[in-house]
Image (cartoon, helix red, strand yellow):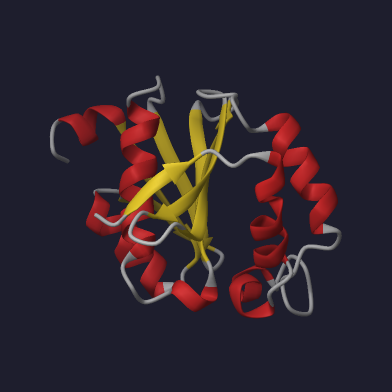
Length: 166
């Protein structure tokens, strides 16, 4: 595995801002932030991430994915507790220029290992049924489909299933 989790420092916010401003990276997000999915004011979002997400595990977790061979950031991962469902919603975002290299799956594996070693009981993700690569990536790591409706699929992986080898 050529990736590691990296807890970003305040001065590393340039990467976060670049990803959130890149239409190719954020295209999946276009239904919520038309027309191109980009998040307005990414610098302000970075300040919020630093204040609310860094160092908050197991309630919240945020990290960059760092390629160890050359020190390049290739994406980010996160999770946060959703009390009304008693699960942790999670996400993996790979910079568009780094997609197709297996980093999404590696990042999801790293996130899963971290989460289940820090008290998380169930990881959950929901996304559009048209996102075939994301679906295959989750299934390859052991997530199971729990619901499919209104063009969305929900997947989860419990700590027990993870420990038992699915």
